[in-house]
Length: 238
Image (cartoon, rainbow, N blue to C red):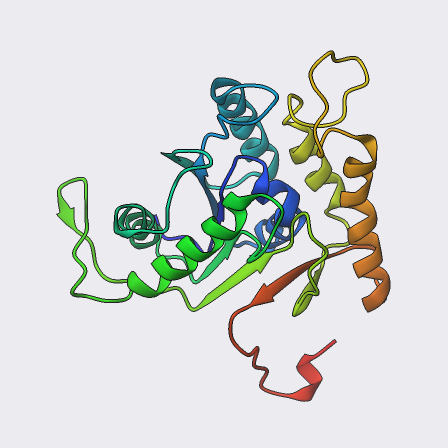
């Protein structure tokens, strides 16, 4: 299956928090989108890997993505090395996306920066024919995505561009709340973490509102890029 967009997250819920509204919008426009989670989030203070599996599946259905897979790397301890790069390359060559979305380049959680660099490096290496990978017994063709963009997470990183996601924030919030083990719940006795406060959940929406304000819309999601953006004409800019 060839996808238009493949979104990677170090943990289940990273993609939802970072770019779910953009994904929902692209799907509404007819794009095919998939999600690859690098780990099962087993080191999370709340919940468990098994619970996160169920929640990730629920969120995928809400977003209506075409596919979601988990590479089951070790939460907290995966590395940007040959072994892990080859696993990511297999996914890139399997789905042949034009665009890859991945973690923030610098963030509070150490896996986010690692995951960002791992996926970005794998996107480049995936285009080298002399790196041989196979899937289901068949040699895979080299494939390099045209674009790699990084969504914004905990830190307020200045975006290089923003996507107007007005009309898609409700879907994003529903997908986030599919992870009911992870976020604000006044009735739980689970330990508090930086992402379990009501303020954190509210911040997802008010960040999108603020980015939307800056471009004259209701909501927007921001991304960074490793290379210059190009347009054919000044009139392409909004």
